Length: 119
Image (cartoon, rainbow, N blue to C red; front, side, top):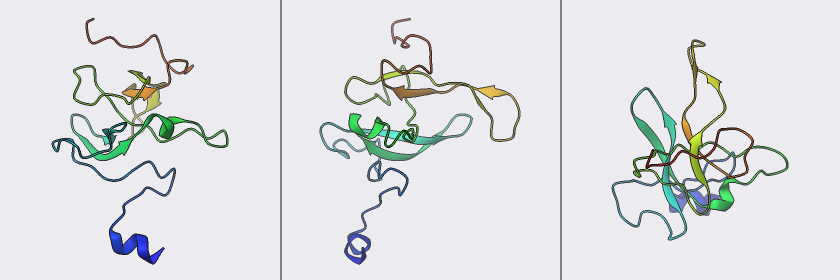
């Protein structure tokens, strides 16, 4: 473990979803990966990590961490994943429900049909 720390490898302990990346830097992630935000406030995305399609698979029945996307194309899902509204979740302050766009498997039960950039 000391070797990993010394190299500065920054992996999330929940699912080892990928290294920290900067979406403004071309090639920040490997070819099959996308630099996606994992946290969002009202208007700002942050906590960017490299994700590939496999990092969205359930592990032992547990859902992977959410990665946010958009329909304008700035944050594109990897592989065959689609960008669509997540299930309804309560806001951090316990107020109104929010439904953010997230990367999902096309056959995910948590959302309407895929959001299309052309609509």
